[in-house]
Image (cartoon, rainbow, N blue to C red; front, side, top):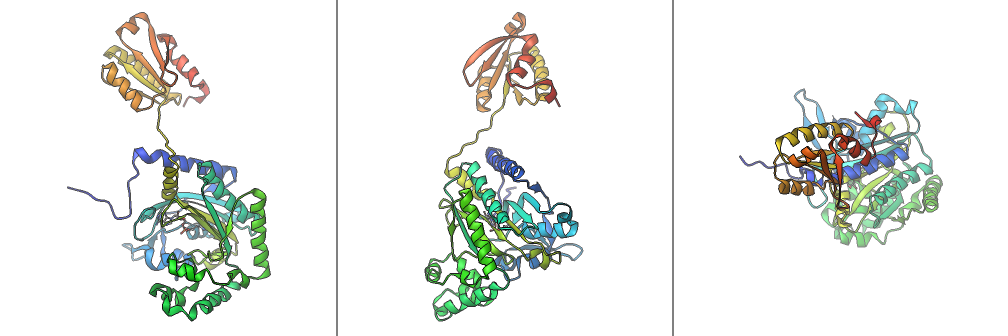
Length: 424
Ligand code: HAM
């Protein structure tokens, strides 16, 4: 029977896993430095978390949700994003009461029914942060700096931070009216989907990928003219903090982002090396979401970035990450194998990654050691057993030392600078 996997999903195979682990580890280390704690929420939620969270006019809610009824007749949805789910979790557990500001991160799979293409999957993986119960412009800057820092730590520097502000609730209807007024006389010339958005969600027209629409919108007055003085001050403070930290950015007057919960600062980190899906990271402030989900009034800011798109960027800079092991043990007969098998067991207990060969052929075992990128190799045959001296090869410097059998474990542990306290 021939199997296939659902459209827009992929197996992540051992040959690729190093890149996934590198990204996850780099993120976890930085989150630790920035004092964020991990949260894990369910893969599916009650559908209303997302309908109320992301907005019923958002593209994701209308077209991209994997929603289904379970056997009990409940409407559930595979999570399309993390912000609404994390906000729901905070409302339920009141985490902000014991930890404020609440700085959370998450890593995991998300699901959107989108047309698959390069960098766009139906099951994709996001790493995100949510900085809750803090409205200072420093929090916005900290979150943007963290996003930028993350890519920089991975060696990905050819990126642009685009930033804008959509203001508060007061400004939103004014901005919508601005967009409508600007477009109304020429609406009939624009594509049909834009005409639908005009009535349902005019702000979404601004980040249309259609080039004719983009060219037209370029002439629009800056939406930030509709912002209250407070919102303008907040935005310029964020820019000032970014300047002070030396984070390069570009104010993009048409950037609004697709999810309806955004208020004030919105930003995206984009790359020219991702094709049509140029955004690797998106985020912003969402000061009303907690209240809208029935919780306390908690200002917040965060971002999410896609692991698959980050891997595309790693591939672009040709970052090769090779798996290696510490030690490969080569026995040349059964008695030697029994001895080395015991040694391997002991050394693994000290955290040394080790593998043993099961054929008696020296050449084929050396080949396997090379394939595994073994840093060291031990060779033991009848002759070495009789002389009580084994060959210990350094595969990096291509040197070899003779080690007495009885000292083998100590020599290897010493070599990898481990001590007894690391034993587990
Ligand atoms: P988003 O812009 O919808 O924001 O997604 C963030 C990132 O997830 C994108 O920039 C992209 O790298 C990745 N992504 C999204 N959809 C796909 C897909 N179908 N295939 C592959 N990668 C994808 C959010 O989800 C917000 N929750 C971010 C946020 C957190 N805002 C505030 N806090």
